[in-house]
Image 1 (cartoon, rainbow, N blue to C red):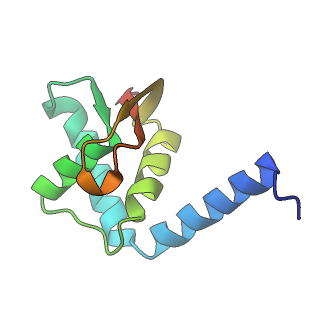
Image 2 (image 1 turned 45 degrees about the vertical axis):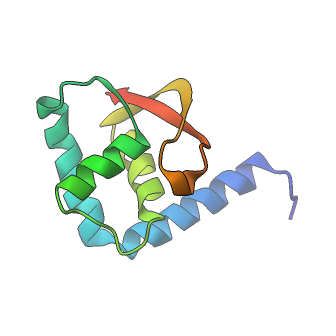
Length: 107
């Protein structure tokens, strides 16, 4: 195995997201449905994954494990609910330690 292989890295990411999604099926479906509804009720066209997490939390939609948020974002992009803008901003959640967070828009 090549430690610096983009193809293997992508496969590992996809395998991990698939596994966490399967372990959080109820969350995934409720969250995707909520995101589709947010397209019509949110006044903002640009938002971050942190915003999505806040919207879901406010709606009482929580995953069994926090890694499900990454799987949710990837799934929402693949289903063309959201698209990445290529712009990154620092996260605000203290436990995120201000790491960079992509800005998304509705697809």
